[in-house]
Image 1 (cartoon, rainbow, N blue to C red):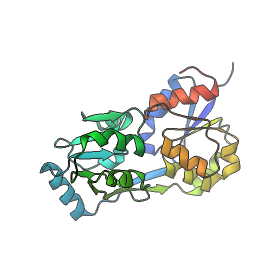
Image 2: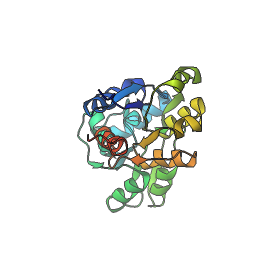
Image 3: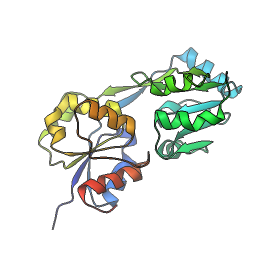
Image 4: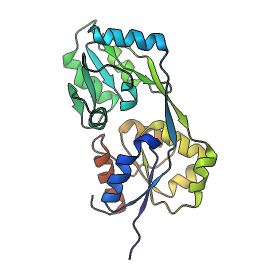
Length: 237
């Protein structure tokens, strides 16, 4: 019997279950090895201010780059733009979703919907990239971009156990996961596996770090990510 290809799931432990289940259903053997963990980073006074402004209707739109950015926020009083995977993770209706979330796609989606002086809330990671904030600012709107969470790399010793593991493919769902795995195992280890990324921002970080990206999910969803894994490892998802 041919052994199923092993695929590394680098998502944070509390977010890994969906991807692992879909990989298993598609005929792969998932290997869970969280490369990062998510920690809330709200300043209490700022969270209180933002929550009050959301309830008061100050923001024309709330843009969520991930479900982590929505933690602790009231979502029922604002238009929300996010990726499809984030919408499903939130379990709440949103105004608009993007099949493939990226800074460019978000700005283009909001361009016809925003008026000058509108205020857009973009809660973000402490080490997040600036493309989305800069792109929205160019639309002549006000951008409120508080730090909502931070990502912390897993210890190198935790990830070192993977060095001799029979891993055929690696999935990355965030730039911080790319950086963490490279720091722990090095570029040569990653280069010997097929690499699949969830979004263009993650793929760009991988390429900038010297990683060959074999595929990027067509949509920002775990199902689409597994389809991309199948496309490079030869299994039909």
